[in-house]
Length: 149
Image (cartoon, rainbow, N blue to C red; front, side, top):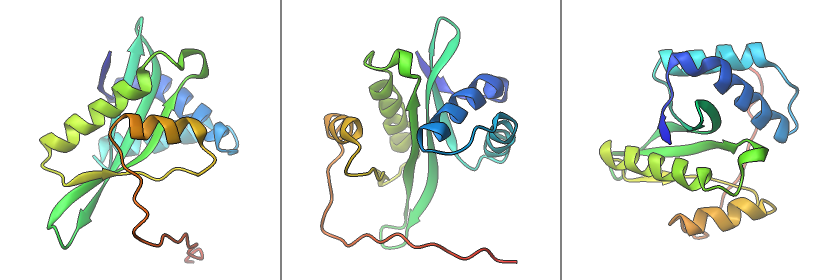
């Protein structure tokens, strides 16, 4: 089952979020994850959906709003998608993506954007299977902004 995350999910969600960050070579920090996710939910900064099995959270997807000036509509950035390693291959990722797509449609968005590494074999199979298309018509660059003091 998938559903929108609520503040009552923070403890379990923070544990999953911490595992997600560790997957991307970040240090474990559950208290910071709890704080970060609490702020996102309370401030309505993002949309977070969770997958649940036997009353335990097994995965999540988090989307952030962006806007297209030329289309004068919202886009959603699918920034985070994670399913606990013991629950992979059971369709939770696809369910979470479908939940994200329903939310995007209901918010009259013009689309969902996502970015994944070329070496992410699972993601590069999953996303096209869920209807996403690789868009190579633009150059993409990653920049780093220096910390502002």
